[in-house]
Amino acid sequence: AAPSHHGAGHMRRMARGAMASSRQAAEPFSVRMPVPAVARPVGRTEDADLYRIDMRPSQVEILPGKTTPALTYGGTFVGPTIRATAGRKVRIAYANRLGRPANVHLHGGHVPPESDGYPMDLIADGASRTLDYPNRQDGATLWYHDHTHHMEAEHVYRGMHGFYLIESPEERRLGLPRGRYDVPIMLRDAHFDADGGLILDVEHPEARSTLLANGRPQPYFPVAARKYRFRLLNSSIYKIFELDLGGAEMVQIASDGGLLPEPVPRTTLTLAPAERAEIVVDFSRHNVGDKLVLSDAGKPVVRFDVTHRADDPSRIPDRLRTLPPLPAPRETRRLKLAVAPSKMAYAINDLTWDPDRIDARVKEGTSEIWEIYNADTVDSEFGGIDHTFHLHLVQFRVLDRDGKPPLPGESGFKDTVLVRPGERVRIQATFDGWQGKYVYHCHMQEHNVAGMMAQLEIVE
Ligand code: C2O
Ligand code: CU
Image 1 (cartoon, rainbow, N blue to C red):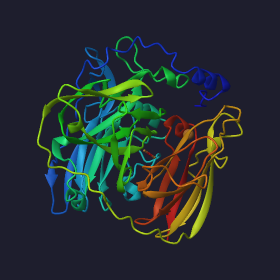
Image 2: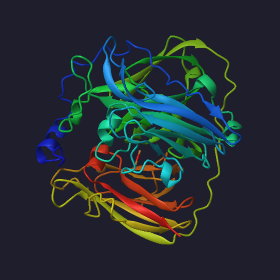
Image 3: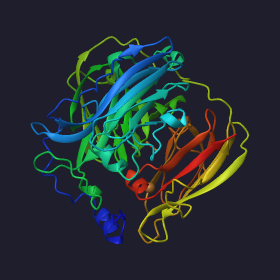
């Protein structure tokens, strides 16, 4: 279907901003933020943990007292969290009971092509597929989500998303907050009808005025007066979060691909679709009874209520990890992200997605620099469009932005990078592991649906 939401009318509506009705919104802080359940393995072999996840429709409670039909992994709006250990395999049998074809992509995962959730490689309704995740990568906050071409925005919007956390033994030794003090938080927006049904209106992304944290609207979360590790993920299909904690310090310790070289104290944090940022917040600086609100551009997202004291043996070391040196690049490629000349699609280098075309052939094991240019500049016809670039299979480093050093928080490994209108971002990736086809695309999934996706083939 031809996308229609990026005409001039759409951009004007965007400019008018938050005019959308908020009749759907409940009172903020009326529900408690859940922590997504951790999946239990159904079996174990010497080198792997085995799981089974049913992909199925489900009725879930998001707005208090209302029932929302959702498409899920495992029946919950935020799917079960997989907790993996670096170096030990995970094998998941996905059974598709959705009544439609779908698939699963492990976002940020270093996985063989057959397990990557290639957009044309679908699990038929009624079929099952076992995917292999080797976990030969650093500890990191990954997530899994649907990647069915043309349907990915819709499927993810309706609930096909969950956390996949990899912990490395080295990381455990650092003494960061652990266990119940290590909390994944999925942030996203949503638009509901009066009965609690999810509305996906691509013409009006600004109507998604309900902000969800772990699948509940503007919840509260009781905390002890001590340090917490929060693993923030933006699973929205379009929205960029501009976060702050009312001026309180958030120490960023990790990005998409794991720990940063050193902690980065900050008071604001931008999180584009599919990006992750891990922060440590020290509530011991606050009194029991204090409430801290994590906000998105002035609008509350989740409130942390300091309810009691607790011991805190955790710490944030000055050095978190040493990054390996960048190998010499073999090739430099240029990618232009922009609305296609036809104006009816989004494109990379003026081409929309074509599964029969290989856009980049990369030699296995080599390192490349990719320069990503967002040509939808502020003085373009549509007044500037943000894009968020994601590359499968690998974690990359951000080399520079318009020739300037990367932003704080971009000093480690990334798999998704925000490219603002007119910006040029250079990244470097080393394509090791497997030969085969993988995609790269804008993770504003509405752009991806509309063609802003291409593929590389890793060859001998
Ligand atoms: Cu998060 Cu190609 O996807
Ligand atoms: Cu885009």
